[in-house]
Image (cartoon, rainbow, N blue to C red):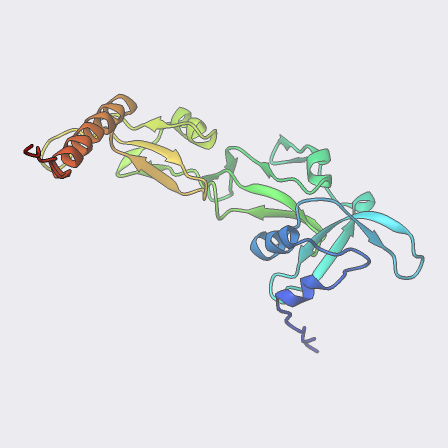
Length: 214
């Protein structure tokens, strides 16, 4: 027998949940990320006792669920990477650098605790470490630097006309690859020259003051 679940709109978060009233900021975070990301005080409806808990939304219905932080199921390590349980218990997020999947693909997933599933939640949508960019194979050091948020110089691959691209890649705030085809020195020179050109254009476009005859 399949049990149907009622879907809720965002209005459900405007109602008190086990004695806790979500602030506007908390409502926005839950709707955007599904996990509250912080510990809140809830009240047991039977015993009237308060306890600390994490809150997550059902991925399809938006119904809130909680997990008492005294009974969280958090492993000591994942794929050999030690987990800071204190951060997870407080609703924090941890980035696992150089996480290698069974497919051999390397990722840097973000983990947090899912109060609905009652287990660690992996977010693989962001922070994927590419193996190849524009036909250029990344070295292990370049992958490590990229995962750490550093800018990675891909050398000087050639454009179709034979000119050097000098691309630099870095990880955007959304986890996607961002490309910068000028190195930092060239970019600074470019910005300076562009600013001078813009200033000259503004001066030329400014109306000239005419001298008045006396």
